[in-house]
Image 1 (cartoon, rainbow, N blue to C red):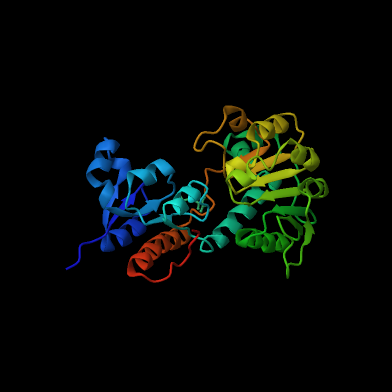
Image 2: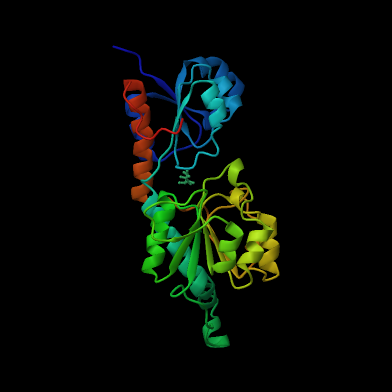
Length: 312
Ligand code: 8YV
């Protein structure tokens, strides 16, 4: 009987994913190791695969026989792909299976922000309705223009749902896409100036760091609404907070933050924001599919068949 391949889990993962991994591989849990240096000394050489959300060059060096990193997530900005390439390590992610969940949460956040549902809920629970009267009026999505920053597979799901909300959709991305019925802007600032809503869904990483900066937010303006379901790093967070405080942008619905899970107190204290703790893909069915893809990629690699969703 051939020996089971050894896999390192860098973070706790969904139980169905862990079960799938355990069926096929020997699993080591890095997050349970008190003495990591000792752990690497004893096991580092035996580990051939990694499942988790993050891997830097230092971790790769501690695993000299690592062959594949299966990222639990579509975004792989926490994986040093250059370091992986240099060491001949393959990298996979979990695209597409989360597109619908991402589309849904984006619309949910937009409706919450426009209609002030969380604020109204807080008002109702605090018993203010009988004491202070009706909650007040707010805006709606219908008839507004939304600019999508990053029209990838998730961006497209957001776009069709925005159309269902009777919004006009335009987009900005590095290149104009063929067979897309939305107006394209090659200039992000110009798009921000022309839209009521800006929805950010580009990959994280150096190329998009602080893409949504003061100039873009100033163009979006005091009535403009920002939605970030991508990565906290894509928005200049201190600038966004300052502009929200001064009502220089209308509001923000945020699922992602610069230093998760830490959110600045100034942001937590604002009433023109809707905050969500990185819940974009967090549904039972989507996370199950993401976990299954992590297992399937590792299985394919060690069976010597093509990877299902490679990035490197
Ligand atoms: C998850 C994500 O938060 O897929 C991504 O890029 O950000 C999310 O789906 C994460 O990867 C898994 O916990």
